[in-house]
Image: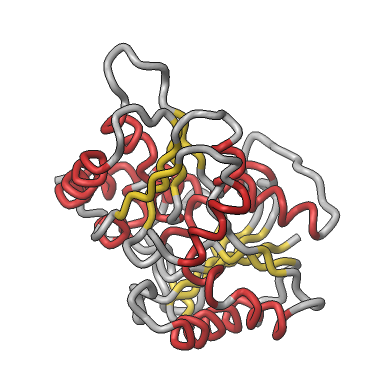
Length: 282
């Protein structure tokens, strides 16, 4: 079994790690676009063009399914991706988990990029799945970029700024950008009020990984250690995991996979993961 994942950057790590936990035997192809990111400020047509290029690089590996682990690409490029790749390769998009978040009945906040917050796309999701819950959109300028760069001070500053914009009575938060799931516990710590009920965070990684398995008729089969091969493509070039990926638990999990590297390509290995992560925090 081979599953491909695509994103502008390392936001795909969360869904890839979820897939690795569900199916340690699956081969994973991670295709991203560091040369063209960020995608958020681009026009819809430009996002679509970049997403198609990234998807074609992944499709060349003949995966059984492609996860679009990017909210921006899912908003703008999903129809084009499906038109080109399906039914040969099932394409699974990423949608903010508004419906399960609203099911709790309390006020909900959606952390998302400034381009997504207040967009017709997000308003439509709230209207369709919000179930009458009080929903506040919280723009998080710079957060995805800080996470992509593993810039610890910038992550702390942007999380704190978004927390200041989040109503204090919110106990449920939707992470509307796949990058944000990599710092979920920092977001939780920034929002948790002393003495208040535990904050609930809703990401998309686990759901899209499970949906990909359903689309190809496969079942979860957890195991003690990963046996699947990891392939990485950066803007069309075979590569290793970016060093920034090892600043996150999801990246360190994936670094323990066997890798498929072209001649001359090197990558950080799991043995140096902790050292790399510590360096990123300094």
